[in-house]
Image 1 (cartoon, rainbow, N blue to C red):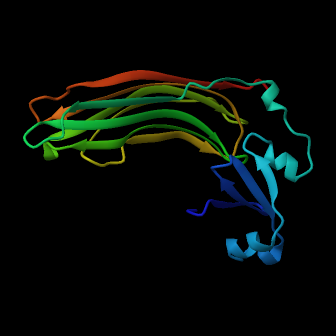
Image 2 (cartoon, one colour):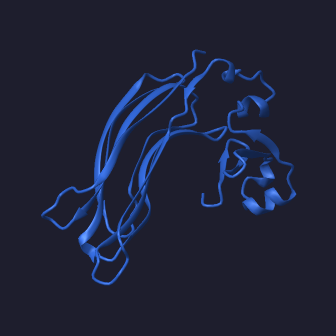
Length: 215
């Protein structure tokens, strides 16, 4: 939910994105229908790191020593800035900052991969004629525990004005542990000046991200 809580079995989890921690509260039957604030204000939280084997800790079972096995390519973000002209009356001007990222998210109990490209800042004095066009093309493969291997190709294009959501996609989101994934996504963006110029100046690059855990 918007507060960052999720209930799984008889546990209430609270995700702290700034500290990369997850806090777990053990619920009894009387607390199942209570509001989150009532439980967390009085309960004793169990602090878990995002890469801990959370359910093993909570249930007193041996943890998988996943950090000893995994090899990770951490290249996952590209940033571009482009500025042109002078912000003066009668002079075409633009300023744009773009971020593309490919991130594996693991919140102790939740495993997900997200690909995103978006505009962090876009300013122009050329009105609605000036837009940003974005493209994401890629191939992603992943294996979840006790499931058959999966694969998916993405090919997305969008065009936004001074503000917009960009492009984002989650190939998988699951409580099951991820045994491996490989993702390579090509990001491209450019400035669009009216219908006569489909693409103008911009940039492009690939991001490759993978995880392999031979359990």
